[in-house]
Each structure stands twice: as C-alpha cells, then as structure tokens.
Length: 212
Image 1: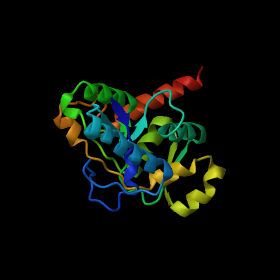
Image 2 (image 1 turned 90 degrees about the vertical axis):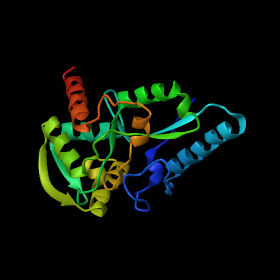
Image 3 (image 1 turned 90 degrees about the horizontal axis):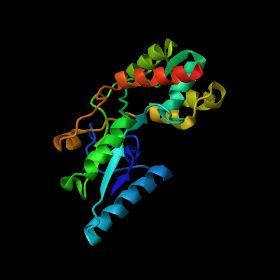
Image 4 (image 1 turned 60 degrees about the horizontal axis):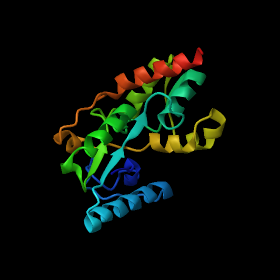
C-alpha cells in the first residue's frame, strides 16, 4: 500500500538543515499538513503492529497537464496576465516534481519489498531558486518578467486583486529543498529530473487548450 504524504509537513523548513531528508522532524501549524503527518504516523503503525506492507511518499510541488490547482494556478495566471514578478527576494529554493514521476515512483515503490515501512521524498534533481523558476515560467508562457521584488505582506494584501491564491504566495516564499537520494539509491530514475524541461512541456499543453 502506497500512501500519499506531503512535503509541506516541514512548514517553512527553517528548523532543519537543507536539503531535508526523510529522517528530519516535521514542523508545521497548517491543519492540512498536520493531518498528512498524522496520516503517516497512523499508517506506519499498521506496519509496525499488524505488518501491513505500507510505504509513504512525500511529493514536492506537483505539476503536469490537466491539473487545475498548485503549479497550474501559476501557469494559467501567467498565460492570462502576461506578466511575472517575484514575491520576496526570490533566492529561496523551490522543489518540483512531474506528475508522471509521482505515479512512476508510487508504482516502483509498490513493487519493492525494501520500501515497506519506509518514507520517501519524491522530487526532481534541480532545486532552482524561485526567481529562476519564475523567469523560466514567464519565458515559456510568453509573459514579461518584471525584475522587481514584491514584499510578501504586500502580495498577500493584493492577492485577490491580482488573481493569485494566498497559499500560492505563501508557498513561493518558503525556502524548500528536499533530498531525493533515498529513492534514487533504491534504483528509481526520474523521467523529468529537470523541472524547467517538464514545465515547458506542461505549459505547451495548457497553451494548446486555449486554442480549442
């Protein structure tokens, strides 16, 4: 049994050294991510107590075609506004993973006896800065990258006006960096190890949908 956890259980990552490994302690006050952490604890108890073969995966920010939330909101907003800017200083890391790699990782781990009772981060190889990700998104969306840094507090106040979800702004200012060494040591290879390549392909799909 493969259970979907969440990398958001680390909160703002400020309490741990980066990149975060699976062995590091979670810390969050977000109700949703707290529920994901308690979910992990509960399913792992089934393994420890009843020997139910379970594995937990913690995907980073998932992107790919057909999505309507998460990274999809950034993409569709840029396609409409044609303007991109950075919230915060833009130097913080952002971790991504293509949806195909999440599914492939789940299938891979489901077939591995060594993965039973374990937790795995599922994230690509390149933790780009948010500034680098935003610039790459703007280029692929045909948007203008505006080289200004908007303070987080101001962006949160303007969120509704500019059509951006508040949680997206909060996520964009976290210095998130996950290690994927554990799953790679088990033998898993990412189809999209570089988020910039996968994002360009994904954006091309969203642009094609606008033409229909």
